Image (spheres, rainbow, N blue to C red):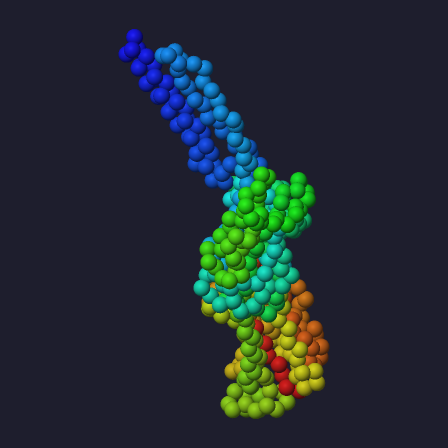
Amino acid sequence: MKQRRNRMKTLQKLLMMCTLFVGMMVMIMPQVAWAAGTASDTDIMNQATVSFDVGGSAQTPIPSNTTTFKVDNKVDLVVAEVSAGYTDVNPNTTNQVLTFTVQNNGNTTQDFVLSAAAGADPFGGTDNFDASNVRAFAESGVTADYQAGEDTATFIDELAADGVATAYVVADIPLDQSSGDIAAHTLTATARAGAGTGSLGAVLVETVGPDTAGVDIVFADGDADGVGAADIARNASYFNTDAFRVLSSQLTIAKTSTLIRDPFNLINNPKHIPGAYMQYVVTISNAVGAGASATLTAITDTLEVTNTAIDPDLIVAATGNPESAAGSGFRVDLVGTTRGSQGTPQYFTTTSSVDGVDHDESTTGGTVTATMAAVLPVEVIPGYTAGELKPGESVTLTFNVIIQ
């Protein structure tokens, strides 16, 4: 009988130890299973129980009182830029976008107000200009990626614990920027109280002093991984930086004039006398190191109104005959391209208003206009848009004028 009672006591002790172990695991498991931890305002209740026997007879276990406390609000967030490199843009463009994520690492649904500012280049380059009209917006979730008509909110609304939202810095790139120019901009997210869908919550104030019976607020955010002095730890804010890099054409235009013939000396030491022919060559080049193609729209050249007249035939200096055909007074040459006309001169009529290069038919002077969408048309293969001049390519326009 005594052995039996001892076995019962041993069994009761084992049961008590199992009960305590299970209780401890219940308290630990939420911290392991969810990164944000137990939600704030959760009541944590705990009760102990003692089991005993009297005279070898097991008695009814006696429970203790129940202890209760509330889980406080841990405010924590991280902002990350998405591209992991420069966002390439062109000059004179609007609504260019840097993309970020904002993650709520706290244990409470929060709002996050967004702001944008100039920053330092995070990729090792030198920030040398600021974009204009800089704004910060939250992704609405209606259509993926930034949409000007949809993504208009300036705060992230009701982001749940462990939730991740997308946010944007949106800006305009000035006209006079060169290839390689860099504009770095930061996105800062600042936690606010959750205030229900559609409303920005109140500013959060960290609880000071001893723990209270209610839901205290603890700021737990880091210092943006030590990036710059603009961010500090434990202030309910976090920022990260991305950068625009300008890719632009590097166009140059040059014009030469060469005396090629006069009526008396012909090509043998010609002089600038009435009746002499001057050959004009206008060259447009996009530098080899340019960051982008240029889309040429027009080349215009206004001739001296009184003392020159267009040569309608583009004569050959040595013979005085048309280089191509009578009335074809303009020649276009391409250098360094993969267009179909590379290496083959193209001739355009002097008076036609539809073939791409025109003269206004003034008796003297007048204006020469080359419409580049016609001169450099679309070529699906090898891949050109109308008027496109890629890096390393040149186009020349050649015509003659006659001294009056």
